[in-house]
Amino acid sequence: MSIHIESDYGRIDISTDAIAQIAGTAATQCYGVVGMASNNQLKDGLAVILRRENYAKGVQIRSENDMIDIDLFVVLGYGVKISEVSLEIQKKVRYDVEQHFGKKVRSVNVYVQGVRVIDEN
Image 1 (cartoon, helix red, strand yellow):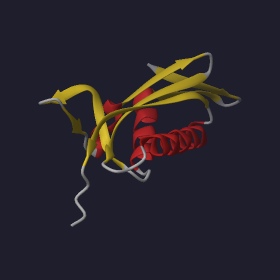
Image 2 (cartoon, helix red, strand yellow; image 1 turned 60 degrees about the horizontal axis):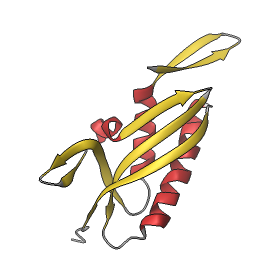
Image 3 (cartoon, rainbow, N blue to C red; image 1 turned 30 degrees about the vertical axis):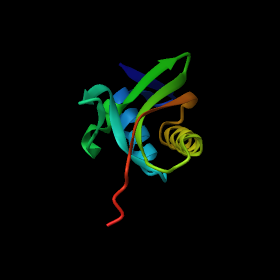
């Protein structure tokens, strides 16, 4: 699936994987986020943290009526205020996607898949 942008010069098709990569990178740059997690992959009941090249697996993109809906599956650090970190993720992801692609983001849904203790060493 892809998202289309029409201009005077022609048509641009943007893959949802490209949008997912930008959204995943933006989410992991927020304070308190340990990493992205796959929405359906658990190992022994724990969320598996994805590597940078696989961030798109922790993001689902839907497009309808020229608007984008984003679902993010994240792992947060122990001791952070989940509601505040989730709000910052929503703001950063919305801003980055709208700036990169010029399309409006209708919703950014954050699903916390797990909490990890961050090693301070």
